[in-house]
Image (tube, rainbow, N blue to C red; front, side):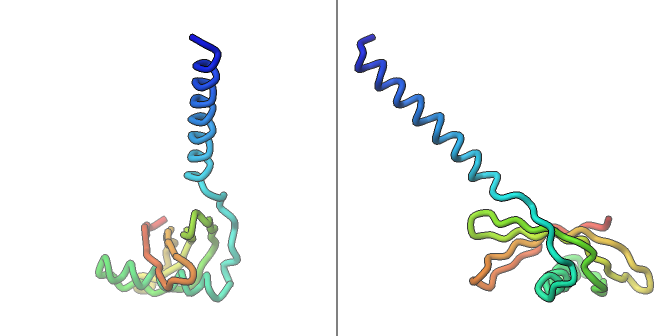
Length: 116
């Protein structure tokens, strides 16, 4: 193999290596960051999660409060994990919710909602 071929091969391999590592970093996005559970916007997302769950599962949970949560921005999407207290009748339970929101577009969707 000539010198030009070896250099070309090296450039191709290096480009693939850099491209692969960049895609791995991009795919993981930012890390989860704690959010303030008493924040007005966080409380609104908690209410949204309970309302959407009620619509999807035909339940009648009553939102009480957000206990804690974390958020992560990935590309243009904001992922929000919440621990929510909600009442089912007279009994309060904790639930885990994952909401995705696209800031500035008015889009949000409940991804998951499970009893803790």
